[in-house]
Length: 170
Image (cartoon, rainbow, N blue to C red):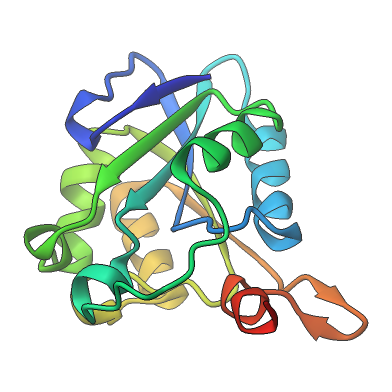
């Protein structure tokens, strides 16, 4: 697995199958997304996870008390175990948080990552103020020519799994 410390460091000559998020804890929901990411990769594409540090809540809400489930190194190790091609760890800051959903899709996913497909969780939100969702992503995919796949919630004992729920349980 290749690790990049910013979006701008990533270069590719092929297309990418992408997922993105904080992936704190790399729980079964995250593992299902990564599994689908790897399954969708072929000889013409590379798998790519875009994750962020610091956690967006640390930047946007000043929540320095958030208890992360994994360090960046642990997260990278857990993602590498699944056969991932590329991990991009991007610094989440105020400037990045101000990107509109379309700026993010066009300038990063399309222009830098050469995205062919994105695989996301059921509750994924993105763009300035987290205003965009799966419906917006589908529209962007049609406009910029990439596929969108959404993964349904993963459950244990009929309870959907999330990093927030895990943190609260700890």
